[in-house]
Length: 438
Image (cartoon, rainbow, N blue to C red; front, side, top):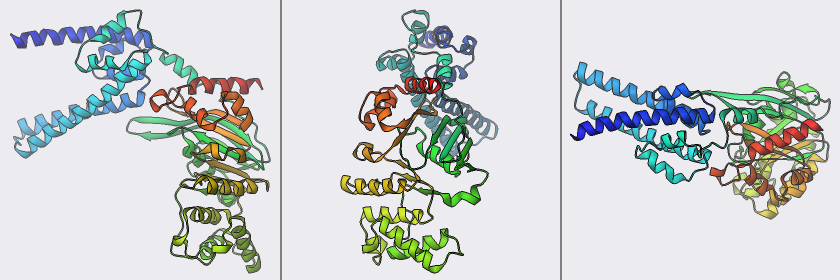
């Protein structure tokens, strides 16, 4: 009796869910008939919920579950392998199934956000109550945006190339992609700007917005579908010729701790400066850089014995010794207190005033904002692709965002599930529109 009821309920549940998905897909701009395809329809539901990546992973897990189940049937029923092998297959199927359910919950939670509903609706989905039928047939349930809306936003007005100039840095980054088992993922797109010489630039963006990816593309470390020129020279085509014109200081210190400060900077100088350089000129250059970063007083001390602030200066000095025109630093003030951070930024500001371009990522921008001339802000759009939200002078950014604090700007562009206001798409489009009018 119970099995018969369960059988008829499963049929009814499948029919109601299919009808509900058919209607929901129509509301979200997806193809309705995809609701008829088992498994794949949950990926489409993820796309409707603006969780395409989550949907891809779930779909791959579902395929893996089917494959493992078939392998288990074959090896146990055909090859007669039982015992430990049988238990291993069951455990693997259970683990994949649990993981699938976690991703399904993420998809449903995002669907609640898309339809402006409370997260407790997820409970109905978890317990196989076909509320998707109600969402589909009721006119009260409407998504915040359709798939087509998000595609239009993703192709907002920021895809206009800027003119290449003979001085400064010109960036026309059309797209940066990466391939994975989940498919081709667009990490960055439509980032275009020109930075004049003598500018100190702050690079901001929430977690995963693509700041490091952007810098790697600019330096040529990870090439993108882009045109990057520095003083009229193509960074990608002329990389070997101009690689020392670009200095990059990563967040982690890449220096030997068992040498003296002077030896560390001197070894870097010998490696990065021309071998034909006279010894007097080489020593003069080393002394100049040591003075710039306040290292003269500790030049004979062992690096490992220095404070965090001194180690950071040493790391920066070893890169600056090559006399780069474009100097990029990823969180150089990480771990430093306010006084040390400001002193470091003051030195970098002085470097920029020599006609160089200095670009800095920092997670504590407000304490050092007065040292910067310009600001670049990146954010994830609806497709979770890194996009340009703003590029220009600090004061203009404050007007654009309607706030004086850098941290508030980041909060505005972060997605709601990240504790932000979820205004990235709106601001990307706003910047693109204003940029096209100028």
